[in-house]
Amino acid sequence: MTRRFIFLIVVTIAFSSCNSCRNSRQKLSDDFDIPDSLKTDKPVTVSAEAIGEMMENIASPVETAAVIKGLKVPFNKELIANTKYSENLNTSFAKALGLGIYGCDLGYLNMYGKTSLVIDYITTVKSLADGIQVGQFFDFSTLKRLATNNENIDSLVLISQQSMSRIDHYLRQNKRSNLSVVIVAGVWIEGIYISSLVTEETKHKRMIETIGEQKEIIDPLLFSLNVYKKDPNIAKLIKEFESIKVLYNDVKITYEVGETVPVEVNGELTFKQNASQTVDISDETLKKIIAKVKEIRNSILQG
Amino acid sequence: MKNKFLIFTVFLFVLGFSGTAFAQTEDELVEICGMIAKDATYLKDFKIRLDAGDPPPLQRFSVILKKDIKYRFSVCNSKDFEGKVILELFDNNRLVATTYIIATGKDYPYIDFLCTKTGAYHLTFKFKDGKAGLAVGLLSLVETI
Image 1 (cartoon, chains in turn purple, blue):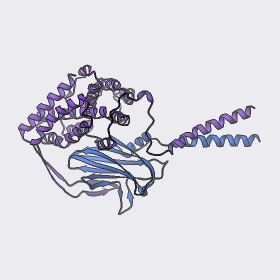
Image 2 (tube, one colour):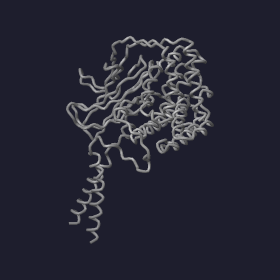
Image 3 (tube, rainbow over the protein chains, first blue to last red):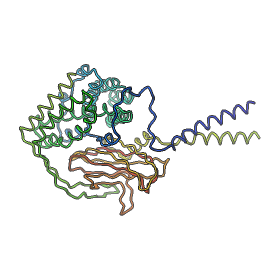
Image 4 (cartoon, rainbow over the protein chains, first blue to last red):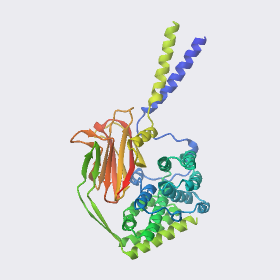
């Protein structure tokens, strides 16, 4: 009797384990399993084509910060948003926008290895993420440990980026792409805001170009936002961003196409693009863009 | 009889747990891909799951790449599937980088792309010979030029 009982338990465990094998061989296009408790109540319906067209990395805090740091511009705490403004962000829309802004600031801090300031920002980002029910994807405890112990900066950058990426993945897969796009908009406005202040301060040619190049980025960003223009908050944001876009009509970007050359050295393959790009932006237009960016970014933080 | 029962029990345990113990998840693949990318800074991951097909099904993504940045694209395949992923990067329908060079038949676990033009680029992933596969692609930043 005991043997039969043991046999029954063994068979049950073996087959329940094997269930996961079957699952892994399920049709590959199946979605990830998401707990019901995490699902939103009012999804915005968007066609698969529209979601597919969305850019994956319209704005990246790491790239913006890397360009600034690469120019040997010293760290400046005044460039980033004070965390006290996060208290003004009370709706899901405002929290998502704030998540983008403070997420971008976190990227800037991480790139400069300012761990003493990071804790304040990860606390703010976690709180905003919790506010739109995605806090579980933000690895707060690991980030806090890394920052507190002044541990590996690379891990801090990696985990921060991965946390933001997981939030984005989750929102897109759960028909909450509207919030994902708003976060991206937040990252973008903060990125161009930081770049604007650095441009004003340094007048560096590369930074002026960086502001001008946003002409190429604002279009896909507005395209993604326009998918959700029925949302009054997003409609308002579109109007504000369009007031920046209008100013870009006076920015001229010209290209010269060139063949990309693959170069293999020690088994490592590098493709060197030979296209050239020239950004033509007058001082007046630059000033107008910077002023508009400051106005919009600061009004967002007022809630 | 006792021994036979014991062997049968052990066999069932091994059979039962083999599937769960070694099946790779996308997150594990992201970790592995991060190691392949070495010291480049993580920017974005792309999870690729495709069924078998002829012509090979594609998974597409649009990315913004910035001038004067050296990017690294790394790929890694799940060992649970036969498919070997191929990453291709396009600029206005012009192929500008790939992890698989047809002429040599050589696959690269990562490639670098030195970008000289800010703008939208298109990434496509497919599995060699249209086999089913599970893979991860990683976009990272190597350095600013």
